[in-house]
Image 1 (tube, rainbow, N blue to C red):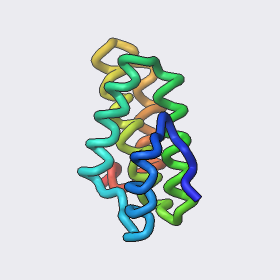
Image 2: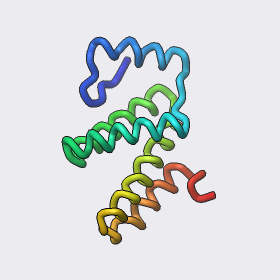
Image 3: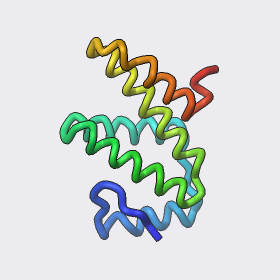
Image 4: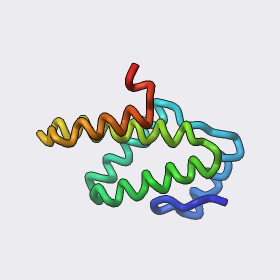
Length: 110
């Protein structure tokens, strides 16, 4: 039923089940909020930990038929990573991260 991502608790499972039941979707503002939280998590626990969560979360979204939400979330994540890399002077990382963002969320190229 509900694939676990990160540290899902028993208290959260009914919330995810209800969102699935209601057909909740991930839009731009929701993706921005989730990515903001994810980047905070990454600052605390590292890139591998945050990428594991985004992989599991997007797999869950695809599992429940929300492929568009999954792509939007990935797009916002990669574009934010590109800004972060640029800010840190890691310029060689920026083009590939922007590419991943645009491939995931084609609306970024407009």
